[in-house]
Image (cartoon, rainbow, N blue to C red; front, side, top):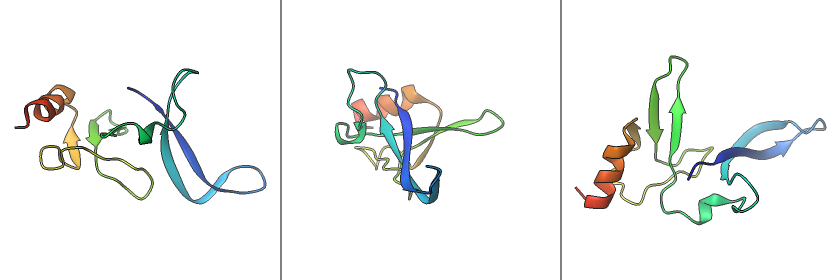
Length: 93
């Protein structure tokens, strides 16, 4: 499931987030829950750099509650190869 990221944290008088923020995945549309992280055992973040390089982040950071159900099979930073990641999760190898 793809989600958007909602940033939360302390806000100033102009409603801008100041200081430390937290990224929370939220569902898109009316049918999905607005707080997705409670329903899934795996939450990954696809990070795209300025050059267009893509990697999956699977370990929690100070701004996002990321996780994987198989930390011995899926590294904290994985190359952009979703098929390989899902294959390792389903086969356990």
